[in-house]
Amino acid sequence: MNLALADIRHRLGRFLMTCVGLGLLMAVALSMVGIYQGVVAEALALSRSLHAELWVVEQGTRGPFAESSRIPGDVRAIVARVPGVAEAGAITLRTAEAKAPQGILRMQIMGYEPGRPGGPSAIEAGRGLGGARFEMVVDARARLPLGATVELGGDRYRVVGLTRGLVASGGDPLAFVHLRDSQDLQFKLAPPAARRALAAGAGTGSTDTVNAVIARLHPGADPDAVAETIRRWKHLAALTDAEQADILTRSVVQRARVQLGMFTIVLLFVSAVIIALIIYTMTMDKLREIATLKLIGASDRTIVGLVLQQALILGGAGFVAATGIVFATRDFFPRAVALGPAEVAVMAGVIGFICVLGSLVSIRAALAIEPQQALGG
Amino acid sequence: MTARIALEGIGKTFGAGETALRALDRIDLVVHPGEVVGLKGPSGSGKSTLLNIVACILEPTDGRLALDGETVWDGRYRVADLRRLRRERIGLIFQFHNLLPFLTATDNVALAMTLAGTDPAKARGRARDLLDYLQIGKRAGAMPSRLSGGEAQRVAIARALANRPGIILADEPTAALDSERARVVMDLLRQVAQDQQAAILVVTHDEKIFDRFDRMVALRDGRIEQDWRRAA
Ligand SMILES: Nc1ncnc2c1ncn2[C@@H]1O[C@H](COP(=O)(O)OP(=O)(O)O)[C@@H](O)[C@H]1O
Ligand SMILES: [Mg+2]
Image (cartoon, rainbow over all chains, first blue to last red):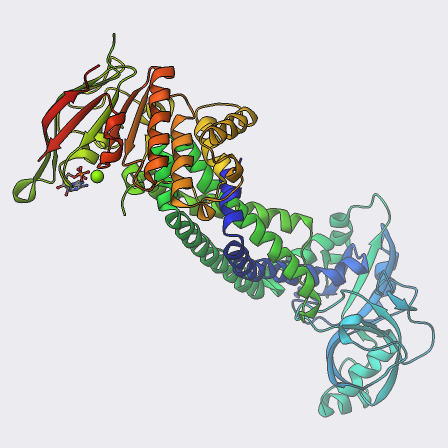
């Protein structure tokens, strides 16, 4: 017979209530880990989906996500001819508010030329952009159905395709449009003064401006070497995908990441204290039983085993409840709750560790119980 | 013949200074294998204290305690693992039966054996035999909260007998039993004393069972007032 299980079975109702409570607390901690992972994953989702190995941006910037970058559209053709580059695509990127059937929708508008790098690598529903103007592929996060119309800068766009998991670092859904449309939009949404100057042919004199050019390389080409070649052009900077990923996680979502990380640590700390208290209460509720065990000659190993096993059973049951709660509710969160087997396993380990740590005080107290305490009253 | 229990000049003081209480003073008592000894005396005379000292639950303040010829205490404990000594060599029966509330009657008895290293299946088998022997076999699967006082006391007795200890210590074991059952329990203990050559020390007020003892020790104010043997 296992004493820990027998005692739990004896007060099953109370134990289950405790597990549910603990499960809710752990669910919050687990969601926090998921949200943290989600912020990082979402920040990287776009650049991953683009399969870009090189980002060519305006000199002196670390664009287009961390800083704004503007380069002439013909840079694309130059980049495409650099040895080692297999294909190159120009992209624009800006945030805009669109009028959608359900109201104003904030989106990150990304312009690219279909057939060239810059589009989503996977379409969840519908199709990718075709040759026609005013088509849009939008992320499912925007909750727009296929065929919906969205008004942007006075033009009506039709949703022809949906992606999944492509959002800007702030959580706004991505919307892909044709490069030409996005450049028009850029012009229409520009402040009136700048627009007049542009229309008069002053300044840069061209609306063929893009924010970045992304390149895919030939197999075997060294991204750093190709980047070095491009950097020799005036006005251009080049970032490898690794550098871009680093900027995205270290710089763009840094504050959100640290904020969530701190909060996760606070939650884990609170959980640890609460778990320790619950285990202590559970142990002290059994003071008389533990004294009786000592009276009939149970060794310290038996007593430690009883406390520790109950702590682990409690932690395990709470964690199973927590995982159930999080996976049942994660779709209701506005941002991704990214939990894979790895995160769940690590959290299980952390909770196990917290349970062991939390039982130490109780184990000490249990070992200090005198057998006479079974005899009173 | 080695004495099962030997107390020489055992004393016990609770507390210190002005509030110090001398609960036992210069107790000399030897109990031999097979002997069934009753311990009586007014409330507060030190009976439980004496029993707990023999059970190594309470540390004496003076004297010497030896069990089966082995010095257990003489100023300090000479046995490293008192709980092992208790689970292997001493059977304890208390006034409050002290069963574990989350184990069935059978498991309460079997636990005493598994703690001493008996294989669980074997322990359960012997536990059921013991409960049958104590005529509560049909309550074997019941939880302690479902047992009457007398039933629970007999489960506690079965547990005390489980490891066939050489020493059985009982504090008012028949208090919750009617006189019929009380006699049955005492006869059972006498049987065990005979079969296992166990030394049995029983604290009791219960005059109905005085005739079941070989020897009666009376305590008063922490001292042995009388120690008499029944004529053989
Ligand atoms: N743990 C203790 N602390 C202080 N005094 C105690 C303690 N246990 C017993 N005593 C005192 O020791 C004396 C003997 O008690 P006890 O052995 O329980 O007597 P009995 O069992 O004969 O009624 C009593 O005066 C009692 O109050
Ligand atoms: Mg007493």
